[in-house]
Length: 438
Image 1 (tube, helix red, strand yellow):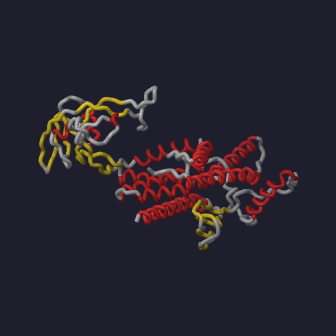
Image 2: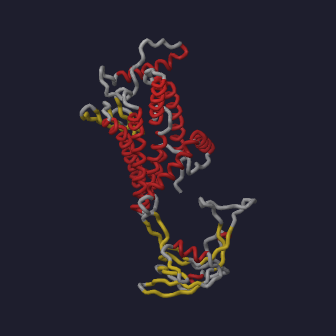
């Protein structure tokens, strides 16, 4: 059953990724069609075509590897300049690549046809190229909103799930009660699982965190709590026991002293554990979460070469991977399988899967904005460069020639090689040293 659940998780991830890629390419296709550019192909995946159908002038189809997609627009680059000098022998390899790119581009051009990408105004070209990442951004917002507002965030309720038998200081790092341990105040007061806390010392409480804050701030102070039990309200008296708790920072990590030992603080303890329930968050929470995730992914992207080097070192030395390390599609699929197979309520697993897909769309959004060809950000840079050339030429009373981006094919080749290399490192690491879910 666990294996089946794992497989279902992988399938959901693959389908979700394929939909994300399809919508990304649709973000390019729709404005291209609106602006009148002739689009020859709309393909999802790479490799040989599995299925395709021509509708109008565009062929729509699927390929087996769901690692990306593309649309083929007429005249992505201007026609090759005539009378260009032959390259020197030492650059023959790259010159051949440039010529191949020009030949492929020429096949999309039809004599006298002005429905080409390079003829569009700069702002229209930028809209077309940013349409794909923008679609991933919108999809991420939708997914995060579903996870956080439609499903919600698990929070402790005022209903008691269990009552501790005794008070064990956190510094003793044990779970079982010993004869010398004092009885937990809530246990001594007769509180039971299923009791619902209404108020403490006259202060209404609507969440467990509110009740816990009052209790933790009152070590050694007698408190009066109104509870509801079996539909009836009653009052219990207890005095929180002073105990210690590990100090944590804003990220929830333990704080240590100069010697490296954990620091502890004194708090009040009653011995209550809450029932948890999903609390839907405000509708704008998905937007806030998207912004926070973009910031997190951007930090990873800036440090990508260093992080991938760290992944390679960890894999070769057998060290555990950092939970925040980048991963390939294999790693994401493996994580999706583990989420689906974990022993948890189905709603928990659904939410985690939705959050994972939202995170993948943020990664697609950020990755495609890198200002290097062949990525969308690279095409935006070329369009801006072309626009700047025209502005300068106009100021001088001249007419600027369109930017011949095929000259950048050697740079594109290097970028592709680097991307393939980094992808291979992550691919192998995700097989032999995957990120652990737990």
